[in-house]
Length: 114
Image 1: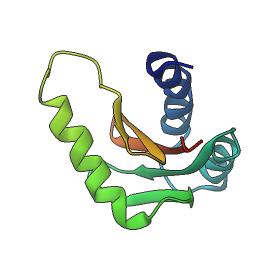
Image 2: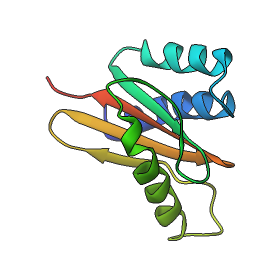
Image 3: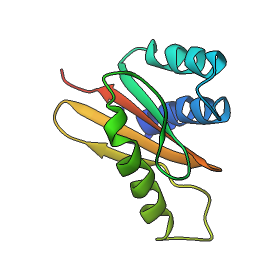
């Protein structure tokens, strides 16, 4: 699967996480669990507009909520009239996809090691 296809496939996951989350309710926890059980997904985190963690599962640190929100804010400033961008960060082992929807930022961590 090429990078564009992988990002497109995960965009749906990020949107589902963000659309179903506004607080740490049991419903949000189920939404995070469902995404975390998708093949290759090793963790996910949700943060509010201030960078406070709304929920995290798997291999995602609650300490990263503020950084994830800040990254989403800064990247959105590159093209302020465009829809919320999908940010992809990757190293040899992991990929992190970040997107803001309204006041909530979602990040999904995926294992890309072979």
